[in-house]
Image (cartoon, rainbow, N blue to C red):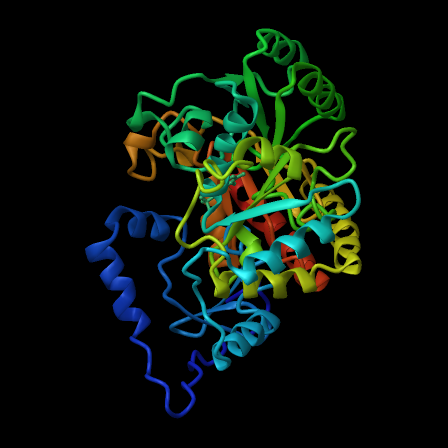
Length: 457
Ligand SMILES: Cc1ncc(COP(=O)(O)O)c(C=O)c1O
């Protein structure tokens, strides 16, 4: 392996402690995925440069394949691994729970673990924030819960979202989804959900004028649309116009929350705090699936404040102990010092990337906040940078440069990806705790690999 720097490591797996069953072979699992889950997804992973069988996590947090090759995961498991893969503090908390005898589920659904986590989350966001929280397992479930909360609390039907959105793949979230393969096969979409042009204040004002809007749902940074940051003017207008129209402002912070931008929430510091925030991904400390909706007690009570409605929204796994234990341990790690470090290190990294890539003909832009970075490539027309050339005519008509860069970076020891709605933008979101020297190593590798593609193009 070249650019990740060092030699191969022995891919030996940690033996299970005596008395525990041994786990099945991961190589067998990779084959079983091809056979029983999704063969094309496996084929696409190979195309992106990932034919390796990743079997363990090295002591420094990198992933190790069956032959001992190392991969630095600069996507942090699509944002889930904010504290690095297999973080020791989360493992210890889960082990402590398993070593005890507290129940994991509660017949009444009144989970003390949910109580502790809700309080800790509200307190961590701080003054002027939230005093009510409830939980689900995946991100899209939190978004669905936020949509239901908004309709139930306001008694209004209409939902507004933005073009470029990605809020998840269930029907409510999907109705807000940007056009493309995530959406196209599944129509008709949930009615009364409108998508507005990105960052367009006049369009927002017009859409709110009818007085029938329950919620405006936005991502502070649209990651899948190419790491697009909402402008300060739009954010200010969002606050003012939703308040005036009596619509709830919902910030989907499943990508941007929990320190990713160098703030606890990306919406910290907005002129008007969102009425509702969704969290997910990193919330489970990288080991458990858990998502959350934060809001104010008054909004929660407007929706679910009678005995008849108290359980109108429910989810079996909401507040399960292991998920909450992992999330509580993760919150402990999200210190002010860590957030400050993310802001400083992220700003330096973006500047270093912009400086190293400057002048390369394929470079469009380097943007983002904290440790959430997009490198936009120009959509050049060149036969060698096309899907036709790669033997994938069904994906033709767009530049393959982004995916080719991902492929080459993977071979150089870096796991990256392109944005879901915008394959010309490379998406980077390393663990918040990543060593700066390793980010510097990536700047060199990215420069080298993009130079190579520029020679082709
Ligand atoms: C902003 C945002 N919201 C919601 C989701 C959906 O989360 P999940 O895939 O856990 O359902 C995602 C997933 O990437 C996301 O980026």
